[in-house]
Image (cartoon, rainbow, N blue to C red):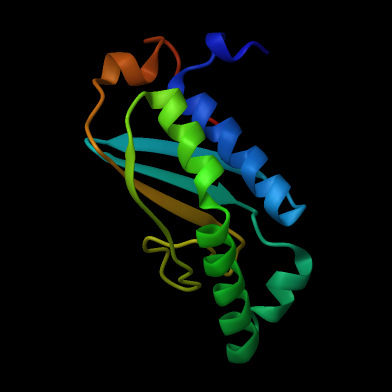
Length: 142
């Protein structure tokens, strides 16, 4: 599908899915993208490999998986940041990913394999610009 026919949310979801596949070799099952004022939240469901899920069952293993994904996110963020800026036309000020396996707060990885990434943008976009097409939902671009 031509990217110009996708909403911004769908384009960001595709970029994040590709980024995850490239950096881990494992694509998430789905990606959800939500923009609220100047905060972009990306949730990756099914982002953990079976081995990572098994490691998460012990405190030491959970710590290892958390640290791995934090380091990987920070060390490989530049291309994703640039792609989000290209798609939205707005600079990304800050980006973070955290793992919280039990509560589902702002996280990178849950015990279920869900991942959330939050990007603080330099400015906001109107809903009309973000959605691109009023009949297409922008909050689930997976």
